[in-house]
Image 1: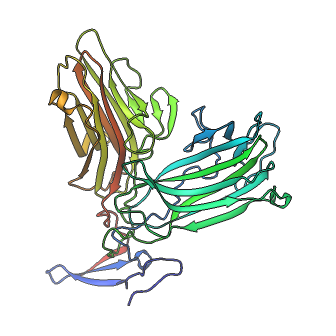
Image 2 (image 1 turned 180 degrees about the vertical axis):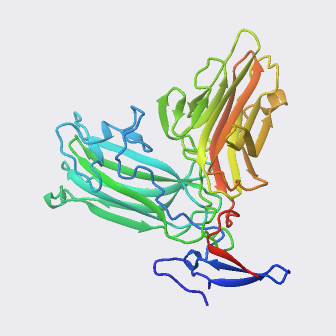
Image 3 (image 1 turned 45 degrees about the horizontal axis):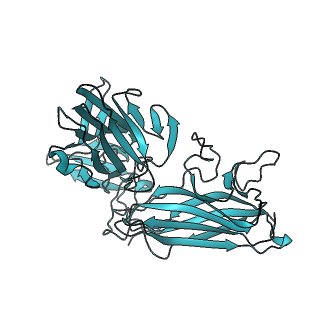
Length: 439
């Protein structure tokens, strides 16, 4: 009979606190296991942590075109903005000291105003999620404004499907203005589909006026409410840690930009940081998911030259877990008079104290069919490491290296990068109270 812990979504198995193990030499080894470490762990658990980044809007964006880190504004219409605290205004926050201000600026005539604030979030397929946030209508004109909080996923055809929708409309009534924050929370009725690993958290603001409407948003949160994914069979393991299946790569969709040389995408670094022969830029015309992808470029040169550039991210991992890398790539353009086959190498590796690299995952892609392989759309790749992360390794590198020897301009897109642990108990670091040998 399993035991349950209040607030724990999984039943815990009975723990054997002391066991006698024979070593076939008439000796006994007594192993005492810490009972507090025993827990029933699903093979494919849902995340337990907060998934929205910068949900309290405390961090400003390094991109001058965006107000907040990890968020971006889209679909702005008629002098509508999202801002931090405007000049000559006092902060009005639900948590922390900042909030997001949806503002309609003055217009010469009454017209429709709208804008959306969004963030892409990596999720576990088959899990059910809950969206929560707080809002405060600070000022309004003579027309009813609306604010809708949404969580949706987008299919390959660009169609949006809502998992959660919280529409809010406030009548033009002084009782609705600046009455403090109202908290909203809603759980999805269905889990994330099994073929979807990314959703969009978005807030749509709209009003018809000639300016003067201000609506505040703060405390945005997205968390899983289900214990295990419905896309796999459940099971239990007794261990102190679990190899979490969530995406370990940050900004794997290349949606968050920094605008600085060498750090075009947040959390990623271009190696080398500068160079005219090969570099990485953001591309928005042919994304695999979201709005942006990483475009590797081998620049045109008067003569054939070797052009190489890499994009790298350091990723914390759990020792003893086996990793799975996936990504999409699209070979867009082959440079004229290519002297060697264009190559894209995806790697997951760790580095020892002597600075020697050891590959856990290695995916080499070569384009050798000349024009027949150009701009054929994205190809999806997935590979699982043959061995787990060594027990003394806490960080790995995810790296994409592009190389070509050519005269003309060569271009290669990468998007949708994910590094996940294969959901099992790690082979390292079991928790024991002690081991006593009795002869």
